[in-house]
Image 1 (cartoon, rainbow, N blue to C red):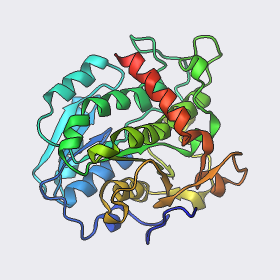
Image 2 (cartoon, rainbow, N blue to C red):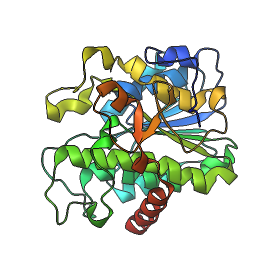
Image 3 (cartoon, rainbow, N blue to C red):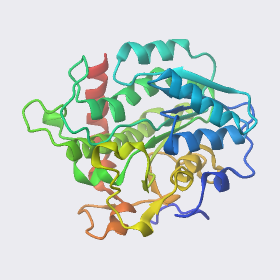
Image 4 (cartoon, rainbow, N blue to C red):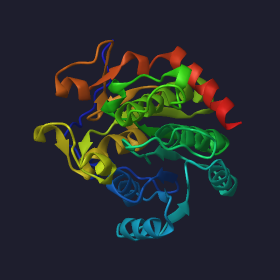
Length: 308
């Protein structure tokens, strides 16, 4: 079956995607919307008239981002502190949300922490920030999403998911040696599986969920690997280009009712059972284990148990 394609591609920007789309009266949340592609995603949504809530660990960073987003002329920008490793912070945010939620962009993330860090619950931190906290956030906001009658969840994964499936027997590195890149890869596989799990559970409530690889973009995310993007210059993107697929999944009428898919360069990625050695093919593909419904269901049930 052929994958979904759109008129947009690798060099498209978030501004080009959002052109002509009216989001007046719609409400959006962008986690980690203080810099990089998160900031560009928030800026694009605001430029189309959405009421955007930007979340961040740091209040000062969130306020600065709100100022940047407000440059679009949209006064409906909110900021909120959200610590994705802290269950109480997530639940406080959820309890404070009122009314419908039309767009949830699970964008916040950390990458390749050089040493093993655990949350107070004992969770490996990359898994907690990149996936588990977002899982709990989305589940908590499910009713708000359902009230929107056509809400969209966008989950930002990475080509690094090819590095590791979810190791269900030892997700949090209790018995196996910690590896920064493999832990990051596992967390990004989990992000992709979340979209599959949400699609199967929430479609009847009018909620769609899709995941994406934004591509190689120089941001603060690479601080622990010396800023090395690991790909040739031809495959690198600006933050505005990196945000394009997120904005496409969040807003484009071309993807109405599309759910449970994985995208790259504004098109559906090709499933593979063996990771390609060519860097362009690696970026444009999705590992079969990252979109497997049984893996998604198993992960969802385990996450519910971890966060109950």
